[in-house]
Image (cartoon, rainbow, N blue to C red; front, side, top):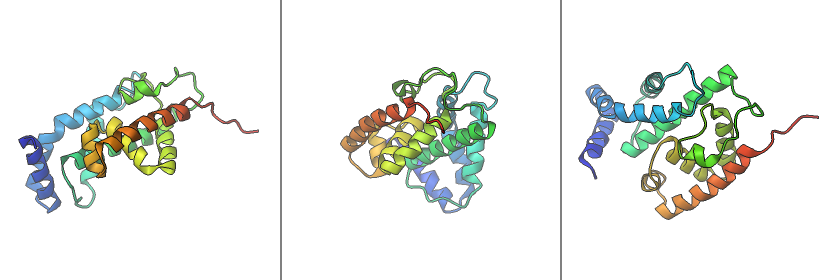
Length: 193
């Protein structure tokens, strides 16, 4: 394991045991990675979005670190939780603002672009979140694979470590999930009668 990864894991364990100095060192060690993750998220948002990558990192920090002391497994687990937290922040923001709705005149959302991290500006995070929630109802692990790989930026190997499954299973789940989500995201919205 990379020495930097080992150091982050040690800091996470120390923080979990109540060492506040470890938290300060941890934030210095992971800030650039968290900011890069936030920038990937924000690249999907419409131009002129009022929430910026730095604010997203800070909000995630507040949500993660204001709670009770977490029990971190390792660096990969930490970044997976950070990814989920950032996703929640953006979905909450979009739902609160109600700026993006299904059936709007946004360009079509192609899952390959979204999952590659280069979706159209204005990606409807509410629609993506709804689709992932529906996928979780069908198969929770497959939804976690998408969340970790796309939102968390984890490799197939890292995803396998977090979920304690084989890398082949991650890749199989990833292929299935892309097809399933593509279908969900391109469906016509149901209309009431």
